[in-house]
Figure 1: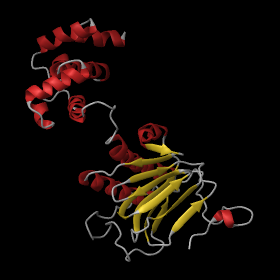
Figure 2: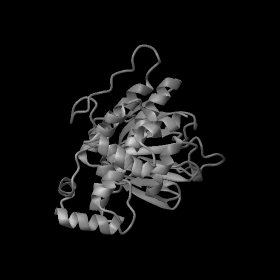
Figure 3: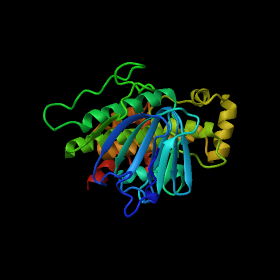
Figure 4: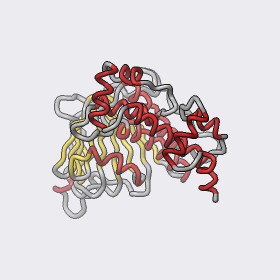
Length: 317
């Protein structure tokens, strides 16, 4: 049965202790009822959980999250917390990490806040889950690195094979736990955890209300690779719209045509290449999706007021 620290005399810490804030601790459990952790005073560190099987129920202050396979649930420090196997789930298989998160992560997680520093990121699709699972395996291996030689090889992520998510009844009661003691091991583990946060939270970044998700998806395609040979037809096909309907919706919702958006994205991409690389102007033009260096120079000057070469030189001066 779970021990409720509120019912204990004196301090509650011995019941369900919170790891020190400077530590990075990674674990993989597969728990059955009546498993539960109760911290009436909260934790000093962040807790990130990734469910691989069964279900968990996590409470933080007045907020609550039911976690199923593919869900990332994050609990911030300093708020009373309790988590357990979700009623009716039978078991809860999950990865967990206690650590201090990097500053940039809170901005990615903020849209998923449900109150009292609890963040629930919606379930990721299959391909993302495989990468997230691999990142956790790598995290567990890197945490055990001493700094000598090469880090241990992560277990293979194959269904039912070595390194796969635990199957109910097959994982030792203590599960797997690793503490990243060395500075290099801690940073490597945090890098893998940052990949998890990016793959889940940044992937599913909520859009502004009222915006058609198909148009936002097309906008993302342009921004991700402006140098690609996008056309109205190819973008429309990506979002399952007819070219005419797509062009109409795009212009109506964003205030400019798809090709205008593509031109602006290519010019911005070119400006960044001029700023941070030594590529010749002709290669910058090609890498940014412009078939003609002459056309590129003309539209670049219209946008930035100077030709590409002068733009680069001005930054150096």
